[in-house]
Image 1 (cartoon, each protein chain N blue to C red):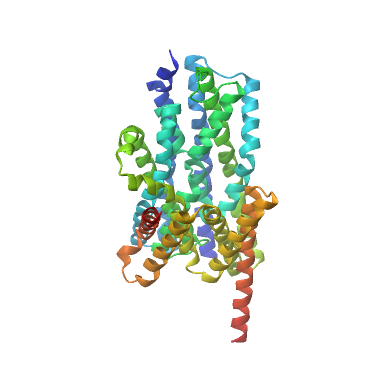
Image 2: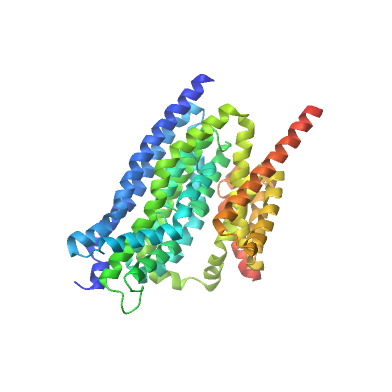
Length: 232
Length: 228
């Protein structure tokens, strides 16, 4: 069976679907557990549904980042593999880089003449082994981190711990945001500033329109993107 | 008070159990295509090649494997972490949705209610992203080139726009911390590469700056309370 046929074969589609099934099933189980536990912490069903709606609207825009890269991956790795890898851990660029690096270990390159079925196999192992890293760390460290935070809350003023964690989160996103601004040109700055300004405006000045709050991030993102494109 | 914390514990224990089982399943599913290629088509790199590939991955991405789940824990929480490191797109998709779910429910991060809303937010984002990615797997190659040029160009600004809005939302309750931290962030991201600092360490520096700014603001506010 030749390379292209295998890469797009029904067998590979089935093999690739297990990960996507786990991803979706995991979320179904977790959201049901969350809704069930909600009343125990004093959250109403209304609040939960509102949160769900807002998250779904907010997710639409950023989901297009993987879509752009997906189209590139389709040509190189075939639909089943691209579909699976874009739905799991590992940004598109990372998967592509890893696939290429793995192929190079056996002397081949993606999309080059020497990309044989063996190179494809190497690419599959490469992406799997890389993604394994994050999953193992999450598996091993997550509950330990939860315990660590509980300990910190017992030892120190919980208000300060909460503020410190907020500071750490804000720090992390300050890093991500700065990475998009420093040395990237003025359209990026425009996009970020306009988006941030829109978000603050909707949250504060338009506070009395609760219907606007749910799609606020989605709207802000689009306004930022479009203004930056128009001005660029 | 103790009643609350026992519920907290039971919820957390449940989440951890679900998380561990689902992540283990994900780890297995992760390898199925490679195993399929081996068992059905007889194609598998030899063991030393697999080891070389793993070493390559470790050297290139290994630090991220360890640092990222730790640094994102503060926003993702327990369930969010189990979900996020399986489904991916943590910074630009899962975290913003967790934040927004908390915002519209009027709860804070780091509280039991906050954790539940964050779980709801992250899971909801997974349903949307899987749907969109699946749709575009089939129609993407045809439809993307048909989009108007303006829309296609605007995709280049998804990240600064998303991070700008998320940052604004996170800072809205703590404007001083937000302003102080982005100032530090911009300076550090500008200066540190010139000193040869790699991006992983840069992340840690800016996070440290955020915690420092938070400490300063906390002390200043406490002083104000005492003076009053």
